[in-house]
Length: 393
Figure (cartoon, rainbow, N blue to C red):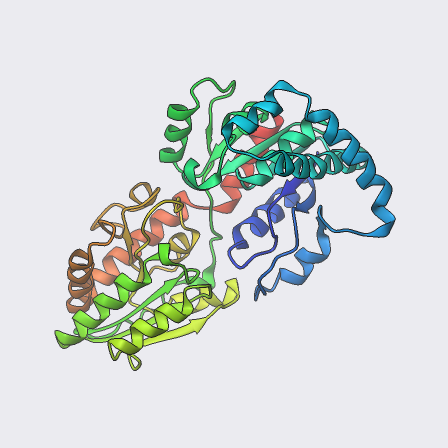
């Protein structure tokens, strides 16, 4: 089956799962054409990045040879503006300029899909890319589906329009599936639960070395953004240092919150304990995870759903310590396959890390149980198989 696969600004630093899913779909015998709304603004370090860029068709690239196709798309988008359901988007806060622009991109996507004889497009975003896919279908393009990766509020307006025209909506957690059912009860097709996943990677196995008691090496893998809650983990490091714990905290990732994090580290005098590593390629991260005693993700607010970095840490046999956000309670059984704490609750985070610092056996027990759970529940091969099953139905 020939399908399209749309990811905004692909490939990005957090897009390892999408690339793995594409490879699994192709390994099963299907043909994938990769689309993206625009080229990535950030440099990526993954091994697959250059191959992925070369394979991706960027819908907003402006080239003189495409002038006629852009003109045809603009004419098609003008016709879309006369539809009642498109006109209703104005009442939900969208401007005519935005609707027209996304309509043009959608009409161009439809023309490419007809030319390439694509039978379906799957989009991994429910923001503007959802509009693009809906406008593509209304312009004569193939059926489409969407994956919801976070709370509806994060993805703007017009969800009834986007989801209403979709063949199905895949939610990466059961909490998101229930959210769609609650807020959009009248969409034609029930939302599907299709989780994200990891590979069963032998190189990711915990290497058996755990730091001695009263010593702890912890890591966070996440973009440097306020919602990831790095500030709470840094505060916990300061508290544990005062208790006499020999602690080391590595922060892997990059982002617009770098200067604030660096300032906090300096103000607390934690330069010897906290290290801003910067971004690493996905395969490097998997190898590095096995060196740590715990993985920490103290995210706050909306937008987090089923963090793949948490799955990868679990798959490496490293105990994970996560805030209760999105689907983390679905992923982790507290005290058994990992640890959970309320958002922004630094005292709870400190006590969990103090427990792990004092008890290397607990690290090993929880890390092993988390690894078994990850390998039985979070595999990309499973998600890719279910995605294609839903597309074919």
